[in-house]
Image 1 (cartoon, rainbow, N blue to C red):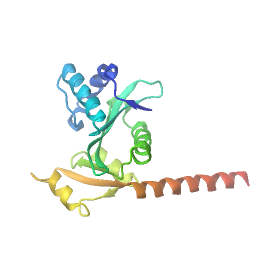
Image 2 (image 1 turned 180 degrees about the vertical axis):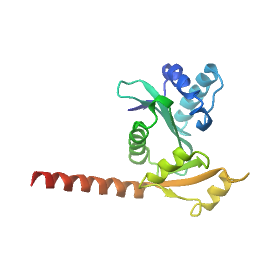
Image 3 (image 1 turned 90 degrees about the horizontal axis):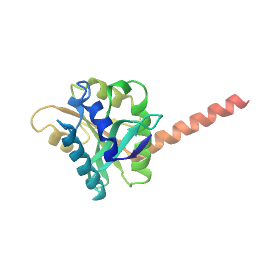
Length: 186
């Protein structure tokens, strides 16, 4: 489902990224294939320096369909950025990618908090964030970060995913699934 970024995936990813329903919401915009190749190379180098964690999202056949990233890593926290190609919207890939990425970030990479800045006009992403049982709208509780993001006007909503809230939700889901399987056995 996820793999480290690789220059070999750039052509497929670039073709997906430039779709008008995707491009406005991509953080690392590239206006040509060569620029996308250069940005990807910079991303790989930034990960080697510990500044970013970036993965390519794959479909069930191993084809690249988008990216998921943790940007601006400081104090065991960073900002999530993810995009999927238009043909893969609404098919469950985003949630699967987030689940795998959050597991890696929280339990392997030592991240404690994941922030999501979502443009107020990006209704699709905002509604998706509001559905996450472990995401907390943080416009008020993280006022300093919220104000930094919106220094020139209200552009973003801020969401926070703390490791402890995520872990509690995962444990609850595991317990509920275990209870359901016991009921089926009875």
